[in-house]
Length: 269
Ligand SMILES: Nc1nc2c(ncn2[C@@H]2O[C@H](COP(=O)(O)OP(=O)(O)OP(=O)(O)O)[C@@H](O)[C@H]2O)c(=O)[nH]1
Ligand SMILES: [Mg+2]
Image (cartoon, rainbow, N blue to C red; front, side, top):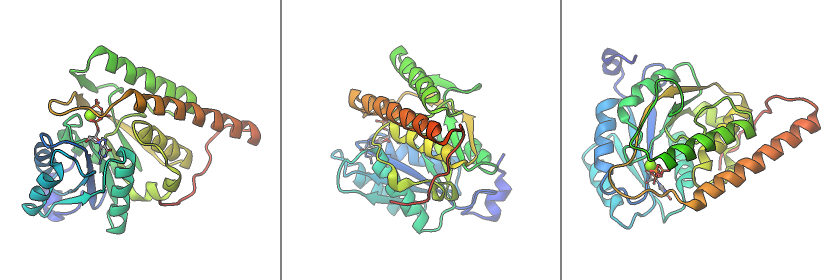
């Protein structure tokens, strides 16, 4: 585990990982953002936080600014308008890379991803390039999700695993640590997903690039405040994209006459 003494020695670095930026994308999270930022700060004081807000009509951006004014560990990226989770994360990754961070964390603002699990994810990142906080490995818990959401997640992940041949139990999960070196090894400029499929697309690219991916069990909880941005459109996007990637990967394997990983090419958007 990460020791308090390590944190004291280098206050802005996570031991064994380096400087870490937690990117929290927000769209209408006024009731959640202050609480999640406070929990992250208490859980891992060494990390920096970037709130990537898509000009939320409910004033999340102004609350984020107030949080940043009162805390040098919090910054805000104001974006023009709602462009989807994927675009907000790509902007956050670029922001981290330009400023010399060694790792980025993806975390939802709605409390589904417990900041109290972050020390375990960062601990795993000492020996990995990508850490996925998984809802579907031994030791994980999913709290207060209705049956239809449980089924959607289980079936979606089963389909992604079979279609894409990835040894990942939660390819749709959005609580992750990426080393910047891992992002450098994959072709981010080719990423086009908006919703859940963004997580699947990055899992696929990381797997194909041959970087070390590990999964850590998390306790995932249904949001208590605000509205989900999940929609049939987002589910449909994930389904058709996974199917298209699966078909493309199989065609490539057949063409090459072998099964295995292909190497990704580094291109940042
Ligand atoms: N910047 C930005 N953030 C977004 C956008 N859409 C969703 N988010 C944020 O992404 C995170 C995940 O969105 P949720 O609405 O919780 O969607 P979800 O977690 O996939 O779905 P639920 O499980 O139903 O909550 C939250 O912090 C949202 O505020 C967007 O278009 N732009
Ligand atoms: Mg959510």
